[in-house]
Each structure stands twice: as structure tokens, then as C-alpha cells.
Length: 196
Image (cartoon, rainbow, N blue to C red; front, side):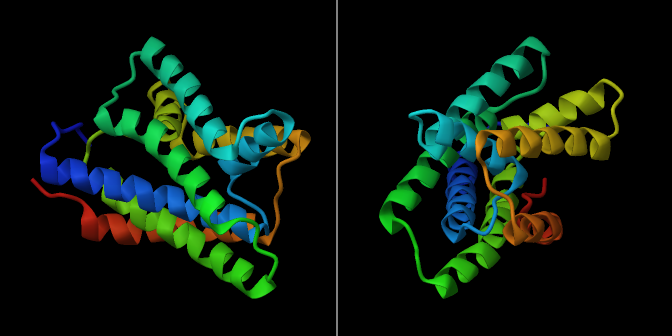
């Protein structure tokens, strides 16, 4: 998928998608039944440092951007926007909702979180304005001879192990995220991708 030049309508779709993505991640955190592999890592760091989880998402994204730049990986305005917006939306959502103690809203948040992430992915990936830094890391491995599935497994597996060691959480929400987000992204991307 070639990186496109942004127009105002396409850029608006990009921002809208990233906001939905960040909102979905925050819902999974609020549910507190286990988070996605990358969020286990971000959550673990945030529990060991003064950084909020959203700020951690931004800082990790910036570090990955530096690696992608050094590796001369293709990036676009969507790559930069991904780093800045998702973390801010996660923090804003968490601050608005606070801690949820009632189990029913927590279950709903956990179930719908990956769907919002997938819907947001459909909007932002469909603009072809550049991959997110974490997807860029996966494709960087792939360009160097590692199969996509192996690269993703290696990266996300490392995130889970490191995140758990730092105090991140896994649970049935982690499993639900893993089994639901892929098919959901495919469903939404097929309908939201901007065709030439």
C-alpha cells in the first residue's frame, strides 16, 4: 500500500480513525480484564514510572520512530499522527471515565474495545497516509526476511513477557483482543479503504 499525500477530507478521516483507535484501547484498559499485548508493555512501564499509560504510548512510539528512520522505513503523516494522537486520547478517555468498579460496564468496555480499535484502524489505515510505528516495526522485520506472522509473534510476545515482568496485566480480555481485532480490522478496512 503506497503512502498517499494528505488532502483535508482524507486527513480528517485519519484523525477520526486515530481517535476511535485510542478510545478503543482505553476501553480495554478500563475493563481491566487484561489488555492487548502492546498495552501490557505500556501498562507495565506506566506502573513503574511516573508516566501515564498514554504518555508511555507516545514515548514508546517516538523511540520506534527513531529506529524506523534509521532503518529508512517508509513513513507518512499518518505515522507521526499515530504517535501523538492515540496516547493523548487514551489518557483523556481514562481521565473522563475514571476507575470503573461495576463488573457489567467493565465487561462491555472489554468486549467493545477491540471493535473500536478495529473501526479506527479501518479509517486510519484506509487513508494510506503511513503505518503506525508498531506496524512499521513489524514490516521492517518483514523487509529483512522475517515472515509477517513471525515478526508479529516475536514483537508482541516480547511485549507481553516484558510487560508482565513490569506489572502489566493479561486475562480473558487479552485473549478476546487477540481473536477479535484481526477479523474486525479486515471487515472494516474492506469497507473503509479509500480506493483510487
